Length: 461
Length: 120
Image 1 (cartoon, rainbow over the protein chains, first blue to last red):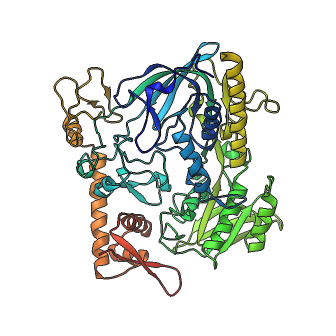
Image 2 (cartoon, each protein chain N blue to C red):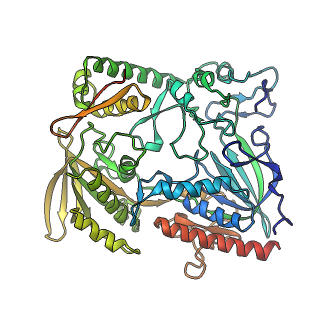
Image 3 (spheres, rainbow over the protein chains, first blue to last red):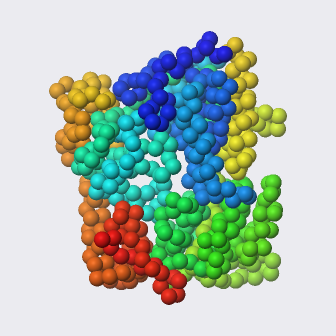
């Protein structure tokens, strides 16, 4: 169907055992030039993955570029999803597997798009830089022997700093591609990993590669960043170890959790009085983010329900300004949490202080009663908000991709064509356009892929 | 990249964050399974931060494993015994659980703190 302008994947080989397609030459360290894909999807989270799948299923050749070691984005790291409480990994993993094995999809992990410029009405040239993983993915059996042999321990970013990991490591148990990687910044080059590797897949001679690729259309699915609560010192995040973020609690609740159960990172105590503080770094012009994050009410309610299941004796209190349960099934989910005994307090937190025993005193304005109050909890979870990911802002060179007033990717016709951007042939999917939940991200990705397919049909046939 | 000997590339790119050219162009060779040695030789020395981090981990690991030799302890008990902040003990101890050196014991009578013990 699209063969006219497309160099087929004749130049690619499926990775042994993984079914992931990587172009020949990438492993050889030489830059690949003049390979043409129908679509470039930047970001392999749930939105980028969905958009890539839709395009690939329609017969188009898609290149997915992901900066992380694994596809799956933030969703693959979640415990469960709201409002159904379905296992997040159970939803994400089959989709990730489908993306990884699809014959029309080529994935570059550990890679970033440095530059995209238009060379004709229907063609862009993209420069992609790929960082070395120091492991030949196609040969790695993920036996973890390198991990066991590695003497180095550093903070595990995939467990949001709650625990350590080795310098030779598999990012997380359901990562894709499921292969080891070497953290070269922290590696002491002792060679222990190489000695035990049964397939000799570790290779410290790997080097960064820069590839120049031709694409007809681009889908920006670069997702979002979480607000850093250290920017609001009054909440004590970083200073008080029992104040954690919602993503850290997400890991504590996940089956692949860092601890054996829910524990305070400050001293290992099993908490029985947990507070959630909503709107941390969102709906707050004083920190430069006046908009609602749209997800923090619901993910806090979800976590509260999961906590009540994991710690049946625990008291969970949610301090909120407004509960925004706007989506399908959200209000029922909120009422369900109330019915389970989650305590909702309409209150704005002014300050958090720690006691000597690690417990935390929350000083807050009781909005309903108009009074200042204090309450003691032994763990606090900050429901931090959503910020734009600005990594994509400058990659289009002279032809600037317009952003909206909050620095998310601008939608030129938000009502009629929400996936269109200021650049013809460049579409946007998921939370790159603004805060949204998982179903909306997938819908947005569907819209972006439909627009991209329509564009490809009109322009390239 | 599976070749036994990897020849240097005259146009080689510096390794990320290390400022080293690899694979070596003229003269340098890296035998399969011994590429760490090759890179070590190219670098001349290991970055100080990586060495310091390894030293610190080994020091704390030794301290915590010594503390647990006499029996099961909670995080706060270990912290008191080795005079370390409890959150640091928690981080390193949980890492040692993950790496298989330590395992989780029983929870105390108040259902508050688990004890931890040596794996073997």
